[in-house]
Amino acid sequence: MEAAEATALAKKALKIVVPYIKAELRKDKANRYSLKSDWTLPVVKKPLRDFENEAFEIVTDGKVSVITVKAFDSTKEENHCDGASCAPDVFLGVDFRPGACFHDRWYEYWEELAEALGLTLKECRKLGDEIFASINYAENGMSFKVKVVNTIYFRAVRLFGGFYHSAKRGGKAVLAVVLMALCLSGCAGCVGTIFDDDGAGYTPPDLEKVLED
Image 1 (cartoon, helix red, strand yellow):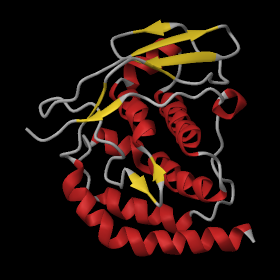
Image 2 (image 1 turned 135 degrees about the vertical axis):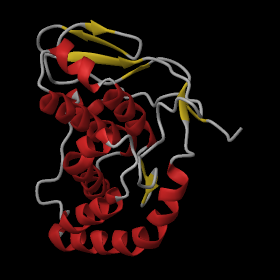
Image 3 (image 1 turned 180 degrees about the vertical axis):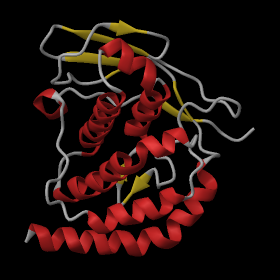
Image 4 (image 1 turned 60 degrees about the horizontal axis):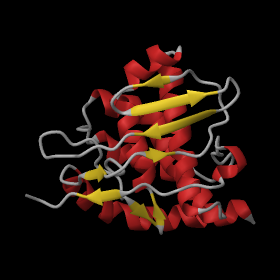
Protein backbone atom coordinates (compact mmCIF):
# COMPACT_ATOMS: atom_id res chain seq x y z
CA MET A 1 0.00 0.00 0.00
CA GLU A 2 2.80 2.41 0.88
CA ALA A 3 4.57 1.79 -2.44
CA ALA A 4 1.38 2.54 -4.37
CA GLU A 5 0.79 5.67 -2.28
CA ALA A 6 4.36 6.80 -2.88
CA THR A 7 3.97 6.33 -6.64
CA ALA A 8 0.72 8.30 -6.60
CA LEU A 9 2.38 11.12 -4.67
CA ALA A 10 5.31 11.17 -7.09
CA LYS A 11 2.95 11.39 -10.08
CA LYS A 12 0.98 14.18 -8.40
CA ALA A 13 4.23 15.99 -7.67
CA LEU A 14 5.34 15.70 -11.30
CA LYS A 15 2.07 17.19 -12.56
CA ILE A 16 2.48 20.14 -10.22
CA VAL A 17 6.20 20.67 -10.55
CA VAL A 18 6.56 20.75 -14.35
CA PRO A 19 4.79 24.09 -14.87
CA TYR A 20 5.39 25.43 -11.35
CA ILE A 21 9.11 24.95 -11.01
CA LYS A 22 9.82 26.90 -14.21
CA ALA A 23 8.27 29.97 -12.59
CA GLU A 24 10.07 29.19 -9.33
CA LEU A 25 13.40 29.09 -11.13
CA ARG A 26 12.82 32.62 -12.38
CA LYS A 27 11.84 33.87 -8.92
CA ASP A 28 14.38 31.88 -6.92
CA LYS A 29 17.27 34.30 -7.06
CA ALA A 30 15.03 37.09 -5.79
CA ASN A 31 14.11 35.15 -2.64
CA ARG A 32 15.97 36.35 0.43
CA TYR A 33 15.52 35.22 4.02
CA SER A 34 17.17 36.61 7.13
CA LEU A 35 17.53 34.81 10.47
CA LYS A 36 16.62 37.41 13.07
CA SER A 37 17.95 35.60 16.15
CA ASP A 38 20.29 32.72 16.93
CA TRP A 39 18.64 29.34 16.33
CA THR A 40 19.57 26.20 18.29
CA LEU A 41 18.73 22.89 16.61
CA PRO A 42 17.65 19.69 18.37
CA VAL A 43 20.42 17.40 19.60
CA VAL A 44 22.29 15.69 16.76
CA LYS A 45 23.18 12.04 17.37
CA LYS A 46 26.78 12.48 16.22
CA PRO A 47 29.98 13.32 18.14
CA LEU A 48 31.44 16.31 16.31
CA ARG A 49 33.96 18.84 17.65
CA ASP A 50 33.51 22.07 19.55
CA PHE A 51 33.58 24.87 17.01
CA GLU A 52 32.54 28.49 16.63
CA ASN A 53 32.70 31.07 13.86
CA GLU A 54 30.46 33.90 12.68
CA ALA A 55 27.85 31.46 11.35
CA PHE A 56 27.74 28.48 13.74
CA GLU A 57 28.43 27.33 17.26
CA ILE A 58 28.83 23.59 17.82
CA VAL A 59 29.12 22.04 21.27
CA THR A 60 29.66 18.30 21.85
CA ASP A 61 30.01 15.96 24.82
CA GLY A 62 31.73 13.28 22.76
CA LYS A 63 28.48 11.43 22.10
CA VAL A 64 25.99 13.98 20.78
CA SER A 65 26.25 17.55 19.53
CA VAL A 66 24.23 20.77 19.66
CA ILE A 67 24.42 23.13 16.69
CA THR A 68 23.38 26.78 16.85
CA VAL A 69 22.92 28.78 13.65
CA LYS A 70 23.81 32.40 14.31
CA ALA A 71 21.57 35.24 13.18
CA PHE A 72 22.27 36.73 9.77
CA ASP A 73 20.89 39.37 7.42
CA SER A 74 20.45 38.63 3.72
CA THR A 75 20.83 41.45 1.24
CA LYS A 76 20.72 41.73 -2.54
CA GLU A 77 24.51 41.90 -2.54
CA GLU A 78 24.98 39.04 -0.06
CA ASN A 79 22.10 36.59 0.03
CA HIS A 80 22.78 33.94 2.68
CA CYS A 81 19.50 32.06 2.22
CA ASP A 82 17.25 31.94 -0.85
CA GLY A 83 14.97 29.20 0.48
CA ALA A 84 14.85 25.83 -1.25
CA SER A 85 17.21 26.65 -4.10
CA CYS A 86 15.68 26.08 -7.56
CA ALA A 87 12.66 24.32 -6.04
CA PRO A 88 9.46 25.46 -4.32
CA ASP A 89 9.98 26.62 -0.74
CA VAL A 90 6.70 24.96 0.26
CA PHE A 91 5.82 21.84 -1.75
CA LEU A 92 2.65 19.78 -1.32
CA GLY A 93 2.22 21.47 2.05
CA VAL A 94 5.75 20.67 3.29
CA ASP A 95 7.70 23.78 4.36
CA PHE A 96 11.40 23.63 3.45
CA ARG A 97 12.33 27.18 4.45
CA PRO A 98 13.66 26.34 7.95
CA GLY A 99 15.73 23.47 6.54
CA ALA A 100 17.05 25.74 3.82
CA CYS A 101 18.00 28.36 6.41
CA PHE A 102 20.43 25.87 7.94
CA HIS A 103 21.43 24.15 4.69
CA ASP A 104 22.34 27.28 2.72
CA ARG A 105 24.45 28.51 5.61
CA TRP A 106 26.16 25.11 6.03
CA TYR A 107 27.10 25.00 2.33
CA GLU A 108 28.36 28.56 2.57
CA TYR A 109 30.92 27.41 5.17
CA TRP A 110 31.28 23.85 3.91
CA GLU A 111 35.06 23.82 3.49
CA GLU A 112 35.79 25.58 6.80
CA LEU A 113 33.43 23.28 8.69
CA ALA A 114 34.97 20.15 7.17
CA GLU A 115 38.46 21.16 8.27
CA ALA A 116 37.38 22.22 11.77
CA LEU A 117 35.28 19.10 12.38
CA GLY A 118 37.89 16.68 11.04
CA LEU A 119 35.66 15.55 8.17
CA THR A 120 36.27 15.12 4.47
CA LEU A 121 34.35 17.49 2.21
CA LYS A 122 32.14 14.58 1.18
CA GLU A 123 31.39 13.66 4.80
CA CYS A 124 30.70 17.28 5.74
CA ARG A 125 28.28 17.79 2.85
CA LYS A 126 26.44 14.56 3.70
CA LEU A 127 26.13 15.64 7.35
CA GLY A 128 24.63 18.97 6.28
CA ASP A 129 22.18 17.18 3.98
CA GLU A 130 21.15 14.80 6.78
CA ILE A 131 20.54 17.70 9.16
CA PHE A 132 18.52 19.45 6.44
CA ALA A 133 16.26 16.39 6.17
CA SER A 134 16.02 16.14 9.95
CA ILE A 135 14.92 19.78 10.24
CA ASN A 136 12.25 19.16 7.59
CA TYR A 137 10.79 16.37 9.72
CA ALA A 138 10.98 18.41 12.93
CA GLU A 139 9.18 21.28 11.19
CA ASN A 140 6.54 19.28 9.32
CA GLY A 141 6.05 16.02 11.21
CA MET A 142 6.70 12.51 9.95
CA SER A 143 3.54 11.53 8.09
CA PHE A 144 3.99 9.28 5.08
CA LYS A 145 3.46 12.23 2.72
CA VAL A 146 6.15 14.25 4.48
CA LYS A 147 8.54 11.30 4.30
CA VAL A 148 8.05 10.97 0.53
CA VAL A 149 8.38 14.70 -0.20
CA ASN A 150 11.33 15.09 2.17
CA THR A 151 13.06 12.15 0.48
CA ILE A 152 12.53 13.79 -2.91
CA TYR A 153 14.31 16.94 -1.78
CA PHE A 154 16.98 15.01 0.10
CA ARG A 155 17.84 12.89 -2.93
CA ALA A 156 18.05 16.00 -5.08
CA VAL A 157 20.56 17.68 -2.76
CA ARG A 158 22.53 14.44 -2.36
CA LEU A 159 22.75 14.00 -6.12
CA PHE A 160 23.49 17.58 -7.09
CA GLY A 161 24.16 19.67 -4.00
CA GLY A 162 27.89 19.75 -4.57
CA PHE A 163 27.48 20.69 -8.21
CA TYR A 164 25.00 23.40 -7.34
CA HIS A 165 27.28 24.81 -4.65
CA SER A 166 30.18 24.93 -7.11
CA ALA A 167 27.98 26.57 -9.73
CA LYS A 168 27.03 29.36 -7.29
CA ARG A 169 23.35 28.38 -7.49
CA GLY A 170 23.22 29.06 -11.19
CA GLY A 171 22.87 25.67 -12.87
CA LYS A 172 19.70 25.28 -14.90
CA ALA A 173 20.35 21.52 -14.86
CA VAL A 174 18.89 21.54 -11.34
CA LEU A 175 15.42 21.53 -12.94
CA ALA A 176 16.09 18.18 -14.60
CA VAL A 177 17.66 16.89 -11.42
CA VAL A 178 14.64 17.63 -9.26
CA LEU A 179 12.38 15.96 -11.79
CA MET A 180 14.69 12.94 -11.80
CA ALA A 181 14.53 12.79 -8.02
CA LEU A 182 10.75 12.91 -8.18
CA CYS A 183 10.69 9.98 -10.56
CA LEU A 184 13.16 7.93 -8.52
CA SER A 185 11.49 8.50 -5.18
CA GLY A 186 9.11 5.77 -4.16
CA CYS A 187 10.12 5.99 -0.50
CA ALA A 188 11.98 2.70 -0.74
CA GLY A 189 14.46 3.67 1.92
CA CYS A 190 12.98 7.03 2.90
CA VAL A 191 15.45 9.40 4.51
CA GLY A 192 15.43 9.34 8.32
CA THR A 193 16.33 11.82 11.03
CA ILE A 194 19.60 12.15 12.93
CA PHE A 195 18.01 14.25 15.68
CA ASP A 196 17.72 12.65 19.11
CA ASP A 197 14.10 11.73 19.97
CA ASP A 198 13.11 12.68 16.41
CA GLY A 199 13.73 16.34 17.18
CA ALA A 200 11.65 16.62 20.35
CA GLY A 201 11.68 20.17 21.67
CA TYR A 202 12.25 21.64 18.21
CA THR A 203 11.87 25.41 17.99
CA PRO A 204 11.27 26.98 14.54
CA PRO A 205 13.71 29.67 13.41
CA ASP A 206 12.83 33.36 13.49
CA LEU A 207 12.95 33.74 9.71
CA GLU A 208 12.01 36.91 7.89
CA LYS A 209 11.52 37.19 4.14
CA VAL A 210 13.34 40.24 2.86
CA LEU A 211 11.12 42.35 0.61
CA GLU A 212 12.36 43.70 -2.69
CA ASP A 213 14.13 47.05 -2.46
